[in-house]
Figure 1: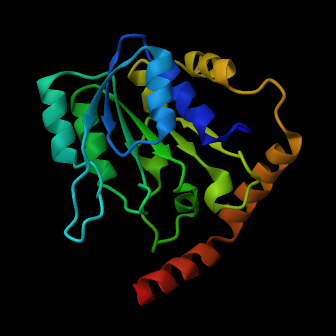
Figure 2: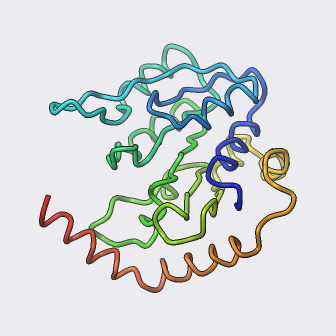
Figure 3: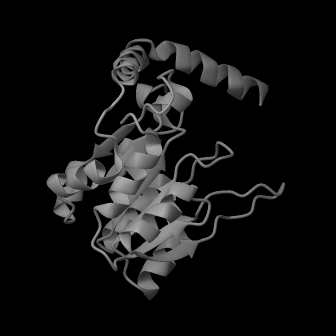
Length: 210
């Protein structure tokens, strides 16, 4: 993507059937709200837990489960990590979504570096999400507006077609992508997967001083 993680988030939502009910973490990015409006979806919000020191935490998997039991949803949309750098229990959220046949869509814009596999970092969103977005310009050095949109195999099993997602992306993405941005995405991805030790060292340093 050369139009930012926003274009990927819009595409994921536009790939859903109009009128679908979606369960959304209330700490979502404004692009999620825009996508809901553009796609004609019916949102219900799950509010994040409040931490003891006042910061908003993440949407709890039990709250997601309870909301899905009350009313089925086509998709669950969460931010991982959130805007305070906190990561919710994505495996548990995934399990809840699976039990109710809902897609798990993840705004992973600030967690692209998790993909390097460093043991001191949280698990990467792509291990659990059906479709997800990485904001490569935020954490791995791509040029501004460089991002990735991904779709897992199980998304198709839940009824999201690749062609549908690609068509949705074509509606919101530029038809004249920046080739310098595309080149920077390749360079950033190459560095991420060949110099993961840098992230491991940084993560361990942060843990040591936290």
